[in-house]
Image (cartoon, one colour):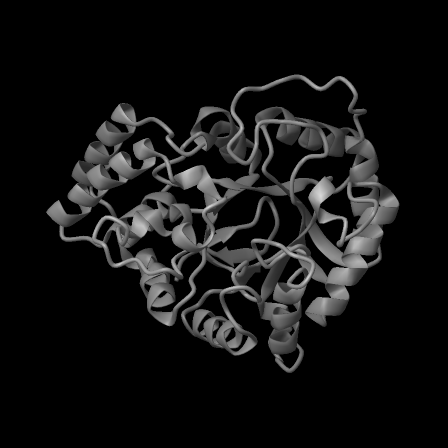
Length: 344
């Protein structure tokens, strides 16, 4: 395994992070524990979750992912060597079963932290993240920015709440997710001005089908030491090549959850076909080529992989041993120019 510094902290996080949003929906508690045990054996020390997981989130499965991690974590003697990241949900009319007051008020964040700590059966969270901004912005596939003047800047309030949680020993570090360059810059600026907890990471989508992070956030990540935690690196499994090779099943994510159409466009399918050709030309699995591409980026702190089977998990974690050549990277960039960001 390879490791990176989390922001400007002394924490060394594995370059591969175990994503867990399938726990409680596509994976049982026993499955979850098997995945967690295998990941730790392979040197993975970083686990990412959220209060609203599993995904797709429902009233019945909300919080189950954290509970499954908690039942695994509670009897371990190596908690100090395991880095747990979770998230507080932002505003959403469809998630009232989590809280009637979704957002980032002090009261809501304190409520959410205590809920996560209880489900995770731990005394502290290593990295606490805002799942998405309170203000309307370009996220979850939205690219046409429309300004929303009703939102009031509350960056300072959020950071002050994070400081209170750090001082109480409930969290160690703070991060953001689904954010923009403007959002990251404001968190960094206000933290410096007021001596408040610094943003250590940005969890945003990044894959061969979505390289929008490179446009504005990559430079800030490198220069300000607030690196990317890449999610959806496999584009809901499309970048495994199984849909092109006709080895997918009814349980495969793009078949099971057809309302999640971000990766279902013809351009996504055509671009993936081109990437599959490159992988086969160089005797690589498409999954490992897709993940290795992310692992090699200077702005990547950790690559959040997920799996519904142990076979997938083993292949994904093993991507850490793949180093893509200059020739492979050149051909990948050629496809990117032909199909730029088909799944933003």
